[in-house]
Amino acid sequence: MSLLRKCAAECLGTFVLVVFGCGTAAALGCNGAAPDAAYLMTALAFGLVIVAMAYSVGNVSGCHINPAVSIGMLCSGKMTVKEFFAYIASQFIGGILGGLVLYALLPGSGYGANALYDNNIWASLLIEIILTFVFVFAIIGVTSKKQFGSAAGIVIGFTLTLIHIFGIHFTGTSVNPARSFGPAIFAGGEAFTNVWVFIVAPLVGGVLAALVYKLIDGCSCDEEPEPEAAPVKSTAPKAPMRNNRKNKKKR
Image 1: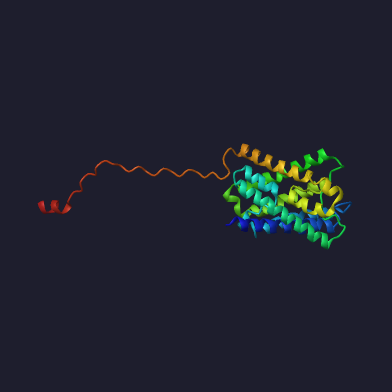
Image 2 (image 1 turned 45 degrees about the vertical axis):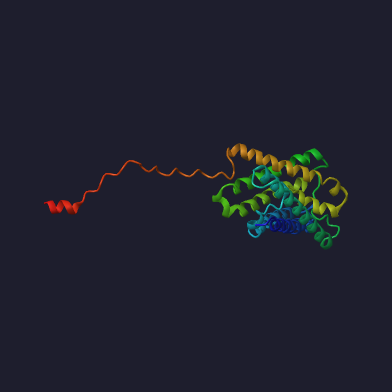
């Protein structure tokens, strides 16, 4: 699969994530006071987008659609540095295009941009690092074992839903620099001023997840079992076969 096709898949997947995930948050008013059902529906929207994209573009690019996931895969040895930078460029482009669509459809809604928790940068950084760590750790784990391959998309989608159920109250849940950057450009103000928090923290969380998984797993994620040694053939000369016909004649 060419890198260009992979990048196109990453751009499209991130675009869909921003439009449907952040769009649901913006439409239901999750940027401010909102009923509990709105938070749950937003969490489900993000999770279901991941499931949909995993089974549509996952076979093309792996469906990272998140720079934090890509940096985790880079640290795990699952992608090259060239692929990493190509992926994150594509993801940011997709995020910006998604933010543009929300800007046109939902003017003045906040576009699902993230916000600091209690106006505290350090608390927000810590929360986002923890949320991203859990998310990327689950992704690396479920994609490292072939027996989990068919269920990986569902597991990842439900993990992102869980992350949002817990995190929306605090920061709106980013765990994805591209998802945060796109809406923040069009929201402006504090959303754009503080967007660096939602870029730095997920990247740190992604790196930590890869390092901890390596430590716990104790082996390369892609390591294959060594093939069994072929049986050694004996070099000793074979005993001559008896000629049964000659023996019968002698009798």
